[in-house]
Length: 263
Image (cartoon, rainbow, N blue to C red):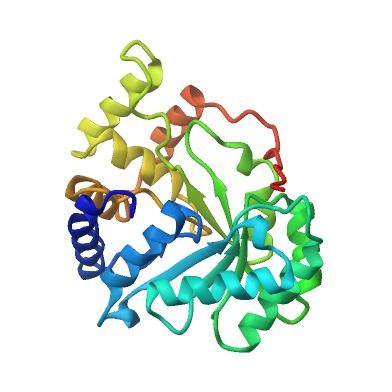
């Protein structure tokens, strides 16, 4: 999104249609298309800001006190809004102490530039450090990769978030779905369930990812087909038996998420 100017009109229209259908969460970041994605979002929400829940992120190279402030101000300008609903640190920084970043984000919260603060790609230990640094500002979200093909968040991150009222935002919730071969048992099962529930394999996989009330997903919405599949997943409830079948074919690794520090 925001990469090719020729696609801008379609991208804006898809986001606006999503808002019309009640899909409120719009996730973006300062580094997506070097700010171009935020500009698209800004045009999409113009005149209907109250209908959208806008999430953006600061890149770790701007994680120092002044960098957070400047990055946020630039994001707000591109988005055409005086505030973000949720402001995230995109990845842990290898250069800037986490305490400094979180205190800068807390300042933005107290100044009314952001309504809530969260993180992305954080382990449990890092979430605990972040909350300590935020002090009276609650850490409300952790955005992590989570899908049938990447279940590491289930080991520690999701249980911790559930216990501490932190929302898990699953990115890439249908990753690798198009790459699995027809001979893969997962391909066969997803298509069988799609037929059973009168929907698509994409929608089944997305419904699986958001089966917990503490997990929301942020799938791409690049075309009307994606939009309608995303909407259907919100109301698709997979049976316990079918969830067990998916668990058997896409087993959890039991490993924790791998933390990557960006310098």
